[in-house]
Amino acid sequence: MIDILPLQTVFPDRRERRFMTRRTGIVRDNRYLRHGAHYMEPETPRRLEAIYAMLDTAAMKEKFIEIAPRHAEVEELKMFHEPAYIERVAGTTGKKRVSLDPDTETTEESYDTARLAAGGVMNAVDSVMSGDCDNAFALIRPPGHHADAGHAAGFCIFNNVVLGALHALAKHHLSRILIGDWDMHHGNGTQDAFYADGRVLYFSTHEFPAYPGTGRVEETGCEAGTGCTINVPLAPGAGNAQYVTVFKRILEPVAMHFRPELILLSAGFDIHEKDPLGGMKVTEKGFAALTRILMNIADACCGGKLVAVLEGGYNLSGLTESVKAVLLEMRDDTRISDEDIGRMEQAAENRQDPVCERVVRQQKPYWPVF
Ligand SMILES: [Zn+2]
Image (cartoon, rainbow, N blue to C red; front, side, top):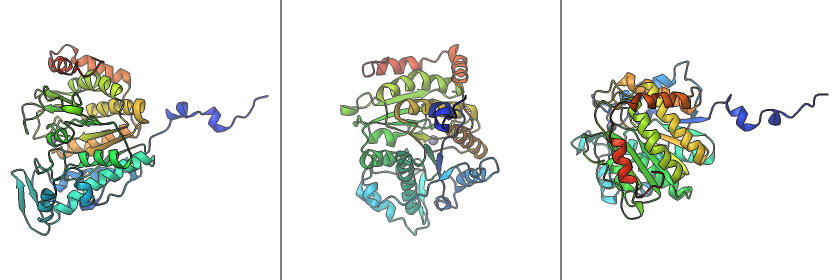
């Protein structure tokens, strides 16, 4: 006689997992279109309009859990930003145009929108930490990673990913967060925020030399944060193979040793091959592979907790298709295999790319994995 086992025994969690998708949250809100409504190029509301339209296509509709954003409180902004700077940005409210930096202008509702961007990331963090979602992607603007404590820069007003990390450290009592940043530009504001703070490991790949000029291999953190900043400056022209190699050879071993309790990602899509600002050659498949590497680290260290935050990306079709590829990977609708990742890495094998060796040499004193 065959015993009829309860369903849970027949399909234990791990085996079942192969057939299940993850619960992926998204932050989307039309109020993000209000900042710089008249902007022509490059950081325009058209970027999010294109992404939101993609989310409404039959293939994507109803796949994601919508996380409602909120405005970050002034007290929360003060976790990183100087009160005088916050007041300066608040003072732009209702004004048609104020220049905060050569690249960064505000319009009537920019202060409000920037607070909503930071609060959107905080709510995404809460959703993932509480288990309401397995992972999440905050599809917000303005972007954040160039903003430092007292300055706007490079289209960024408040540093969304820094505020999200500080929120996670404070509210969820975490002690180790990994921030990955694959945007084409170095996240100087994020690096600054945690340069002396060993609770946050900041890992950035970026085109070099390029704006903002920071992010050299030798910038590795100081005091309690020594070794917790890892910069991988890449020459123009790097594509999927180089990025996957850097993520596998540098990020993965260090992150596994660090064991983050949450992973945040500054997801910039200006490394896409079609991007007008960047000189990199990453494709949709490359973005999916990098996402999978981060998911594998998150699965091994923190139950898959990953929150992606939109930064740059200025070719609308490249941006939209790449966000789609990342979201499908996050949800496990697509799964780039270890073999695929290995093959992509192999493709770089024959290319002389001394940057990995330089980074390893620089970081060796801080990480026993090297
Ligand atoms: Zn960028």
